[in-house]
Image (cartoon, rainbow, N blue to C red; front, side):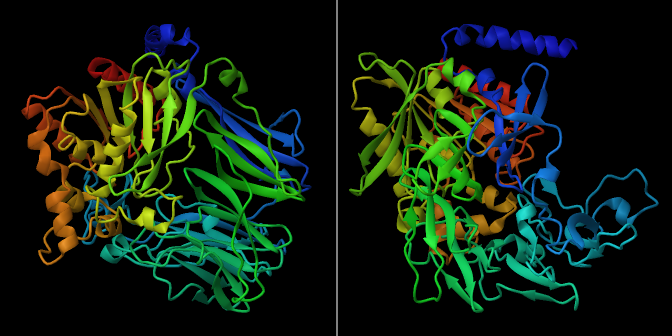
Length: 635
């Protein structure tokens, strides 16, 4: 109780004066309602969704489930909802239920090998993939089971004795397994590789298990990259997402459909990548979302009758927002997720007849109506190699061009993916601007939405053209009279953290402050401790000991931030999560130690229980507090 009172006092003292200015604050951001769609009701009349509201002071969360008419109206709180939605886990004929459970298959712990040594605490490994994302391998694997819908039915493991996971690790869910329309087969996604082969490969496949024969076949054998998200149409036609190249997690993502047994890539000749898709209810079209020139938009493509009659996708939405996902369809209405840099995710309907978007949920209207929003504009910047680069500029609320403002270069992680109209509860552009900073967010090389060539250029060129892109963006806006060039900062996480570390050694006095969160500092130790080795093999070019690998040698010698630490002379805040196995703990500690030994003003913000992200609400509150405290001190 005392702890909660202290936290409440800290919150009121730290942000009491800021709240009076009627702009976004960290507490306000963390306590926004988070909207999550559950689906469309069986009768197609209602949308079921939940809102989760967090309380910083009490460290508690309240989740409420609602239903709202798909045509719009007043949401109605409900206690249960599963009976309102189609149950995808029940077979279409109603006979079976599908589910997943962990199965222990390997000995890992000391107690597994030495059960008589009861108080031991040791893990024993003889191959790679000994940890993933934020979890150590414990010898248990998630398997798909099914059982008849009767009281005494036996559960059957369709992956019996296989040391593989479905759902996939670390982020897979129920989209990784489904029933065939005839209830005779179960389709599931997994990567049937172990050890080193698992850690260097992205070769997931879609398998089909037959209930009668108990045989399993690989439906996507021959494709070496990701095969994910299988889905059947109302006409029983199968589609899925595919990446071609093994080891390249950011490869072009295409929609594949089966036409008379032939695998047909219906987006192969489209110069962009698909995020997710959904069949239309008639099985004649596929709707999907994809990055498009600094945003994420909704598209449709006709389902061809044959492989030689493929049409180009048609863009359905356009605007300064992201359509980040498709919830479902009822008649002529699509329900989608939509957000922008000033607004968290809300549910919208898209009218397929007249092409209009209509806001359905209004979970945070009261908050946004009580504050002054930021102005967000596109700015086209000419890069060093003569390209036009879209750069988002987010201005402080009540921006006055006659004044001068400290300005921050935001370096996005990834490194691939879109820098779009997203809204994060961690790296929030609106909150940064509300603290009095102009934010410059360039779509440097590696960003999707500008064609595949632009997206792929960054691989094996981490410290090359995209670093010039960053500097082109900050130099371009620095020409404006309202930018205080004596108060420029640079911030970023993951690859953005790498960018901050790298730019700290080459910025030639531009910046007065850096913030690097879970960034790659020493690429050699990064290669030796990260878990998904396919990532560093592809993007860095390979391992550092292969002297005949020109791409890798260039990366480790010319693009390693640790090699330029002798030129560091600027204050830097370093943030690191102990459970980040993607960019492991040593990266942040090495960088902080180097900065301290060089006598540079520096601070380490260390989170023992966090992974690559800061997920705990009170930890996040302190993250935001320290973030802006550092900028106040150094800019």
